[in-house]
Image (cartoon, rainbow, N blue to C red; front, side, top):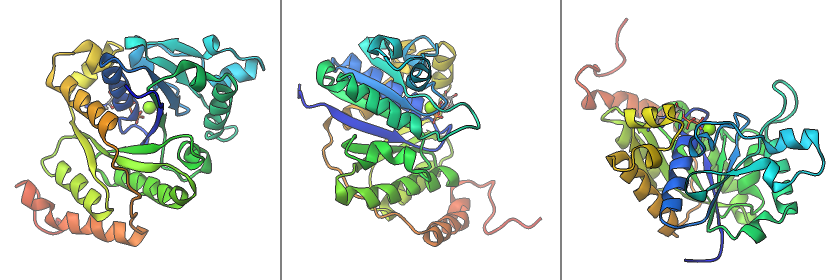
Length: 290
Ligand code: ADP
Ligand code: MG
């Protein structure tokens, strides 16, 4: 097992399944014997909940507000498979910049010498990302992470957010920023979903790391406060996450994506609007008349 820690960011639009996917990847890596740290970089602060029975953890930002002598034990807890869980946290709602939490958390963890001392194989950063604000670009900007993955469905807004991440990677990669490991298709349910994600990957010169279908197994596991790996280890879905984790652990072929311009993205979406009827007989060819 390599002793060089790999720092990996997982981005995606809010609610797209970043935390679910990241926690299942962490659980699958831990199950294979790797030492893993998962850092939630989303003001929602629930990234690691399903690794720890569904409970909330004191966040780094909350702890910093209470004390200027924050200890690792105050802001971390071991979850399933020994995954070390940390939540950066966010500002008081309506006040301050949400990206600040990421900066503050990473600084505190570096001051505590966590990465040197803990000697993890993987540190996964679960980052809220439409990347319109510099704060959320922190994990990919300054060499904190080696690589980023983006979780997207086939919905336009999720793809729009993925394309924004590609713009940020494209901007920062030449000066030491992270490169892209791939796209993770999540919550795919329609029969055209996979084709849309594949086509977006092709158009942007990127690749797909894995496809995670929409499944009740995920919902049920979440209701139990667990990952699928823990709650339903023998399910096909658990194997989908294991394969994704294996891909992330083994694949070293990173790329700098070619993001689409706003107009290119719009035109590409319209083309899909034109051909989507081929996938589902309930959809008519061309815009439906009202
Ligand atoms: P994010 O971290 O991107 O905000 P979450 O991981 O919290 O999103 O997921 C949002 C909701 O979607 C959760 O209730 C989660 O259980 C559900 N979900 C995510 N992925 C799937 C999937 N593949 N199948 C079914 N439900 C999913
Ligand atoms: Mg989340």
